Image (cartoon, rainbow, N blue to C red; front, side, top):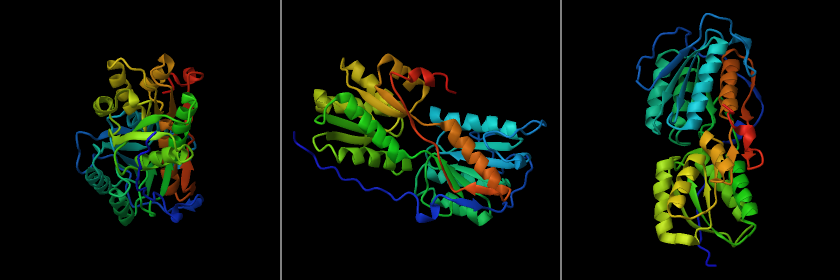
Amino acid sequence: MKKKTMMKAFAVLMTAAMAFGLTACSSGDGGSDTSEPASAESTAQESTAQDSTAEESGGASGGAEGLKIGATYYTLQTEFCMRMDNEAKKWAEENGVAYTSYDGNNDAAKQLEQVETMIADGVDAIILNPQDADACSACVDAAVEAGIPIVGVNTMVNNDQLTAYVGSEDVSAGEEIMQYMIDYMGSDDFNIVVIEGPMGQSAQLQRYEGITNILADYPNIEILAIDTANWSRSEAMTLMETWLTTYGEDIDAVVSENDEMALGAREAIKAQGLDIPCIGIDGITDAVAAVESGDMIASDFQNAEGQIRGALDTAVKCVNGEDYEKEVWIPFEMITPDNYADYQGRY
């Protein structure tokens, strides 16, 4: 078949300074009062612990009680990010921590404003879930200048001053879903379309890198089209409708960088009376149900609970001057028709 040349630049997402190891960090200057942030947005959500004992949870240090921690998420409109935020609220209640979260609305500039608000509010540590690997570097600079530890979670930022990072290795996820699709197809000669996340975000860059790592060994698998749907189910549905109009039944499979987009693509496919296999990443509730029903062939589960708890535990250790790991990696787990029941009601 005719092979189209695909070229794509990849960002270097972590420098040598982020090598895995043990580090200690002094406490920031942030206070531990429970007053409202200097700029209380309607999107801010606060969870302040009750006057009960602060239990250790998931490896948290005993010195968490009374601390004030803020978090900015690139969005709180997707199930995965909402799961992280909800789990952070539980952790805060368990550990006696005043926790405030912000919805970045997929806007790196807004996330910087939110970091500045947290600094003004006197937080002891900041959790950063960045929208853009480069644009959100300013968030790290601001926290470092203020002497406040800042821990990245789930998506990466290109700044070697980041205190620590907790997440899952997205290159491996891209490799896993692409290889699973090839094994499912039972062929090394077919056409795919690839749906990407927001351009410039580390997960988008790295998952595509993983996909192309596998495709390098399968020259007869052709990418007919590739575009972003910004992690959105509705955008992916519209994008897939366009591709079906353009390529029709030449599309043999859909490889999506997250579940929301895979599910949107699948809706468009079913509306056309077609049955094109789709695969995604995250293991959200609807994706698990889709694997059970056969609407998706698989989903690579990403542990939101483990990531955010790891980030919060690390932040506490840093504030208290304890040893902590500079990088913590939470493995992906493939959800298949054979094991989907293990992931039902996981949260």
